[in-house]
Image 1 (cartoon, helix red, strand yellow):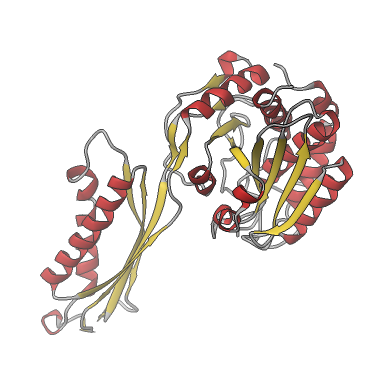
Image 2: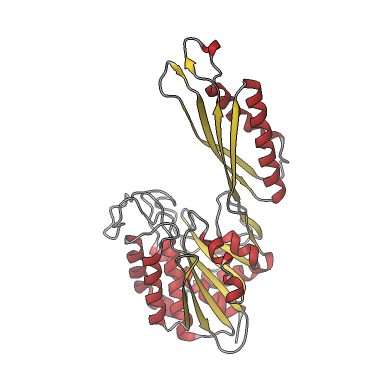
Length: 387
C-alpha cells in the first residue's frame, strides 16, 4: 500500500468533510450549498483560480504546477438521490427525501483531498483542473459543463474520474479500455383502444392485451436481432392501466430502459422497438404513441489513458489489487460527455465487501476508501506531468 503520507495525515479531516456533505444532500443541478462548501475549502487550500456556477452550480478550481505543461482534468460529482435515508447514522441526511446513496459525498471528498495535497506540494508541471460537477444522477450535469465550453476554456488535455464500488475490497481499482459503462435510453409507450364493460369485451378494443403482447414481443430483440458478441439490455420496468376489475380501460402504458455500447446497436434497438410496437398495435387495432428519449452516451475509456491510470493505481494499492481489463458495466454515467470531448479514463474504487450497495437507503460511503482515491488523483497528476 502506498497511500501518500501527507494525505494519510489529514484522513480525519477528509472524514469530517465527507460526513458534513453527507448530512446536507442536494439534488440535480441545484448543488449550490455543496458548491459553496467546496469553494470555501479550495480557497483555504490556496487553489490559484476558482470558477463558480459552471453548468448552473458546477465549480472548477485551477492549481498551477512548476513550469509549462498540459492541464489534467479531475472530476467528482456532487449530487445526491431523491430518497429517504435508513442508516440511522449520527451524520445521516438532515433533508427528508434526499440522500447521498451513491457516494458522491465521497467522490467530492476525495477530490478535495487531492486538491489540498497538490496545492501544498505542486510537484508537477502544467496545471490541474479540479471539476466539481452537479447532476450526475439526473439532467446530465457533465453535458451542461461541457456545453458551456469548459474543456476549451481551461484547455483540458485529459480527464479522469473515480466511482466507488461496494462489494470490492477497500482500495482495489478496476477499469477497462474502451466502453466501460453503457448508453442509457428510455422508452415510454401509451396504447389507446376503446374502453367498455369487461363483461362485453367484443364491444371494446382492449389496450391491456396489446400492452402485454408488446412487452413480450420486445424481448425478442435481444435474442433475435443482436449478435451474441454484442451487449444489450431491454428492461421493461413500468406498466399500468385500468381503474377497476370490471372495466376495460381506454388506454394503458408501459416504460423501459435500454442499455447499449455502440452507435450501431443503439440505432438498431430503437428502430426495432418502433417496428415491433407499431406491428403489435396494428394487430390489436390500437394506436401506440412512442416516446423514445436518448440519454447518456456510452462511457468510453481511452486505452492509452487506461494504461496510465492503471499504472498509478498500482503505485497506490499494489499490482495485485488493480484490474485494468475487468469488463463492462450496464449502468450509465454522464462522465461520458467529458470523454467524448477529451481522452481519459473512468475507474472504479473498491469500498469494502460488506454493507449495502449504491442507491440503497442503507448505503454509506466507506471513509477508509477516501485516502486511496485522493492519492490516486494526486499521484496521477504528478505522473502525467512530471517535473
